[in-house]
Length: 387
Figure 1: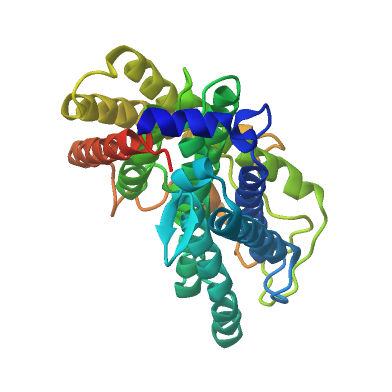
Figure 2: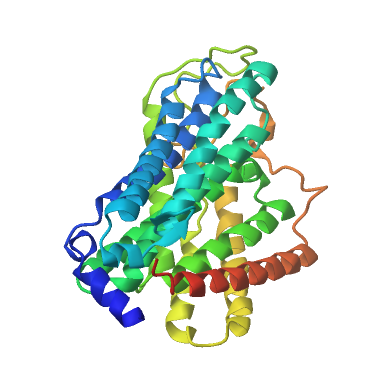
């Protein structure tokens, strides 16, 4: 049955030509628009405050949800009522309708995003500006956005795993790019723990070791490229750098009191964390030891992540608190309009209450190993997805 499915899918003009299927292209654009909108929205809040729900940043976020939701919804209707035998065989049945598994995940994400919109508007009207990124409506919104990105990744993986020929490499690159966009979304969710001033604390490295190895390991195992994790980390870095460098080019002034730091341009998201370094290590290790047991790979990859990420991020964060980081390239020392500026900007925080001790490093290693093991399980499943 599997060989028949592969033959029929490859023969389909919608997946066997030189171009990506249109619904996948729109979903990738929607995923990208979501991340751009989220980073833009954080910058908007840090620079201007919250003036109306209908900001350009919010429109970019919900445009991404609409693009993914409508394209996947149309795909479900098309597959159910007018799909050929190959398209129906490569779909999942849900409530009498048929669509690829990734499409269903994206549809759920779009519904969650649209549901969160009035909740978020009410929340701001009741409580004002958010004091943290993960407010209740933002959690609902974040789950929806991540679902769209996961759904897009699953659609691309399903095609990669069953379509032979020249399109496979393009689909693999699409998988890696979508994985990078998903990585950017997850890193953004933990931005409030990731100030450069907090990158000598145990909490920063524990959070990083819990979340990021899972994604890197899953992508490295499932995407059929020689350097899948590196490509995904490069995509994450490129998206973040684009927003870090472009947003400050636009003038803006605060509109919501109290204003202690009268900024004149859009606040840039911080320079991205250096995940590309452990990503290269993941690819190198999996190129050589991919066939080994996941129980042996997990501690090796976990140690690689913990050691390399701690090494590069520890010293890089120290650099960012010096005058060498205060330029247009690194974009350090930018603060939101409500910050009371003082010498605390150039010091590491919480070193007395949350130090990175050897015991904390050991905990980081254990968290990274568990995260990698889960990521390898996910990656092995993702490598077999065909619907």
